[in-house]
Amino acid sequence: MTHRSIAAAAAIVGLGLVLTAPVVDAQAPATPPARVRGTISAFNDHMLTVKTPTGALVTVALAPNFVVRTVVRKHLNDIHDGDFVASTSIRGKDGNLHAIEVHIFLPAQRGVVPEGQIPWDLAPDSLMTNAIVEGVATVKGGRVLTVTYKGQSTDIEVDRKTPIVTYAPGDPSMLKAGRAIFVIGPKRPDGTVAANNVTVENKGVKPPM
Image (cartoon, rainbow, N blue to C red):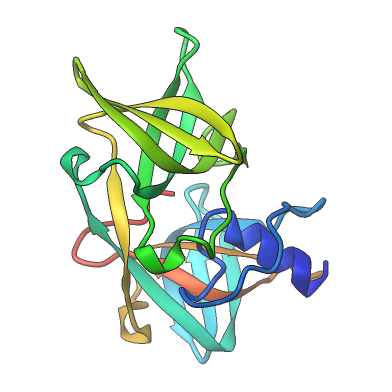
């Protein structure tokens, strides 16, 4: 996998880019990167061991200048017209997209993280949508977000229990055993995952993506 493809894959959810990094490519690569979710088992000298929900241990090799970011809890009322958001959603029996998480991008990420919608692996048949909020309607139990990306429009239903977060700066001292973590990067032949950034739990708020 080329550096160009790696950057493109990470950009689709805003987790593979430093906030001020330039856009490399908006297209997802033919071979998607590994997405590692779980809790930190150990961290030592740029080597991160993550215990996944299945109990497997995954080793993540962090770049020398790796970036740590964390997430801050937000609420439905914090989402407004014009916001740049990402949401993992699944299609319900009613045919509508229902969010299982939403993260609000920071202003500096707009124009850097490309818009789009791709298959995601947080839940079976889930989708990740990066889009601009064009309308927020109140419905029983929550909100309906009308979002646009690449000239397309779709509605995503968000209920009051859906995890909603935004990003915040972190530092390596946050990489403590037992904390939840999300990492994305290419998988090496030896099974390790290479990454230049991590998103880690802080103050009880876990990366929901």
